[in-house]
Amino acid sequence: MNEPVFFDRQQPADAVRASMREASDVLKRRGNLALLTTTLLFCLLVTFTWFTVMQLVGLLFDYILLSVEAEQISPLLEGLWMLLSALLFLVGVMPAWLGRLRMTGLLLSGDHPMAREVLYYYTSPRRMGRAILMGLFIAFEVMLPAVLSLGAFVGALALYNEVLVFYLPDALAVLALICGFLLAIAITVLLLFLSGLYLLSTAIAVGNESMPVWKSFTEAFRFGKKNLLATFLFSIRSLWHLVLSLCTFGVLFVFWYAHHYNLSYLRLSMALTKGVDPS
Image 1: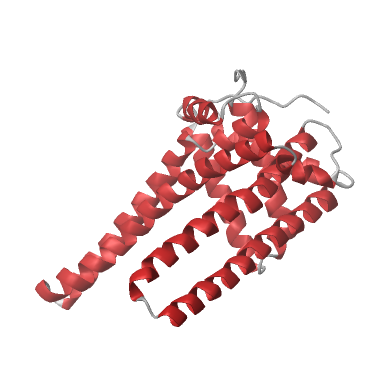
Image 2: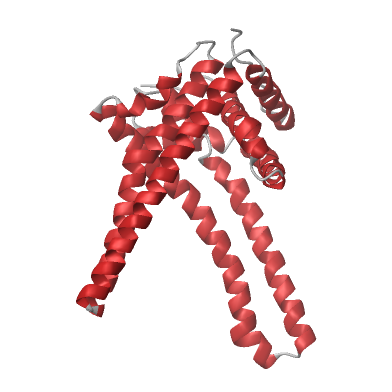
């Protein structure tokens, strides 16, 4: 397989287009789409199993609460349920998704991995620990902008319901609410742009197993701050693909865009982190 093309950082749009074009080329090779679809269905099955188990555990906790009729232990059980959910997800689900991402990287490097490579992070305690740590970093990276963005929208709506509607005429209150939502949208776009500071961290961690997970985060920041526009454009195009997937009730996601995202994400990461030191 040809070596990855390391794009000129002065042309971020070209870098994103080239990464996505190469991802499409890899997907069109014989057997790759079937392999990635099979492993995606496996990961979805693992996720659904985790969800089902946690629903059953939740019913058990509800039964305990009804049996003992002790309201004082309700917050404790809810906290235990949330902690157990997070722990089982990190241990039982996240390694499968990261194993699939690693397998995607093997396809990009020209290898022909077997479907069992999706189980890679389950095969030793060290790999499992690495997957759990990567999962914690991913959770932080996803939750931080999501919580701040949601907080901006909730704050604008709360300001309207609790203050503006009582002290301003209706027309001005609605206008202020619209301005608040526009500000929240601007904050969301800004957070999406700044998320490029750490967007590459998962790719670096998966592709450099000798590198500590925490260092992959610092390396991602080092390269991300130089390529914020490229990572932002990639995120925008990926969100558009997600919208298209939702319009087809997930069909495009399962049979194309889920695989295309992983391939293009890893290819772009390889290009933007040329020369990363894995030690």
